[in-house]
Length: 265
Image (spheres, rainbow, N blue to C red):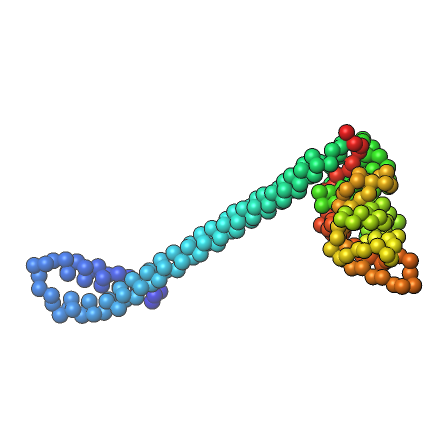
C-alpha cells in the first residue's frame, strides 16, 4: 500500500515539475527547485536502469547471433575441408592412374586395374585382396604390377575378388637378373619389407645400388620389370652363393591400386 502511494506521489511530483518547467514565462520558484532536487536522483536512476537493461539485451542478442554465426561458419569450414580432402584424394588418384597409363604404354598388353580392399594381418603371409576376379578376366597365376615395379602374383580367384601373393612373401620367387651386368639369380621373399637375391655365384661382381629386373624366364612376369635395388652384398668364403638384400621398388605399405597383366597383345 505504501509502495503504491510512493509511486503515485513520485509520478505526481514529476508531472507537476514538467508542467511548471514548461511554462517559460513563469520564473522558477523555490518549490520548483525543491521538486527538481527531489525527483532528479530518481529520474537519473530510472534513466541509468533503462540504459543498463537495453545494453544487457543488446549484448545478449549479439552473443546469440555470434554463437549462431560461429556454428554456421564451422559448418561451412567443415564442408570446405571435406571438399578439399576429396579434391586432394582425386588428384593423387589421378596422378597414380597417369603413371599406370604411361606404364601400360611402355609394356604392351591387356591389363585390368584393381583396388586393394584387404591385407592379410598375419605375419606369416604377405598377401592382399583386390576387387577384380573371374568376371573381369583375372586368372590364377597372372602377374600383378604397378608403375614402380612387380607386386606379386594371383594365387586365388573368385567371381569378383582375387588374392595376390606379394613378392615379399617367403613362398614367392621371381627369376631375375642384375640390369647392368645381367647376372642371373632368384628374388625370394622373406616375409619382411625387403627381399633376397639368391643363387648368385660368389665370383659374380655385384654392387649395392644396382637395379634388379625380371628376366622373363619364369614365364610369369614380363621381361625387364623393376623389382628393386641392391641394398647390401655379403660374400662368405665358405659359401657358394652371395647373401644379397634387395629393397623393393614398390612400397607395399602404401599400395592402393594395382594392374593385373592378363596377356600380351
